[in-house]
Image (cartoon, rainbow, N blue to C red; front, side):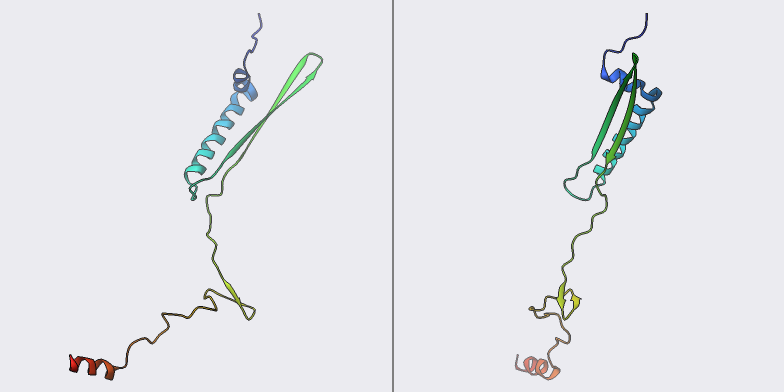
Length: 117
């Protein structure tokens, strides 16, 4: 009596002599690693499995394909710039620079305060 498959899982395990199932395992492991390395609080990975069945003269040929789409593990935050006279600046043109040097008080003012105290 010939062996009859009764489940999709059994069929998946036999595709390409088990190589397809091992490939899917690899894709799953890569997806989990990418999710754990994701810099954002939320990200998504996707694994797509496509099974094609071709029937001809009583024979069924099954072709399997699996692909993954992983999240970007490197993300850069945006940096604001302002356009000023055709050039870029990181300083907002309508704000004054509070840390512009020099900021120290003249020596003679510091000495007068110390003498009166």
